[in-house]
Length: 80
Image 1 (cartoon, rainbow, N blue to C red):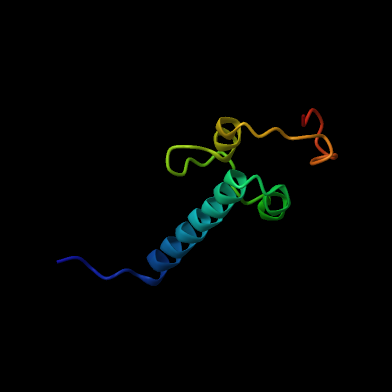
Image 2 (cartoon, rainbow, N blue to C red):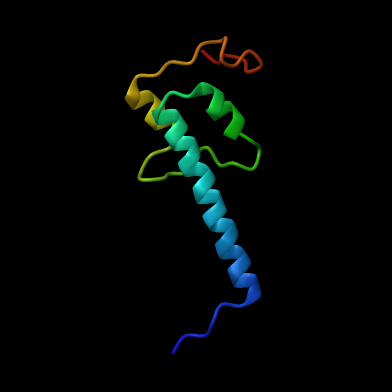
């Protein structure tokens, strides 16, 4: 018999699901080459190196053949 989740455990599980949901949204936006949505989803708390379904968002972009232009990210040095 397992003990029910404590309030702290439930909060951790909720946070974990929220992070996975954000990563899934980022991966979907990358797969669709939706640069505006990718920009909107990016924030300092998002782990862009997180593997979801065995890939990172960058790996999805590269394998899909997408290229980033300096117009898409003018504030990031060496973006292209």
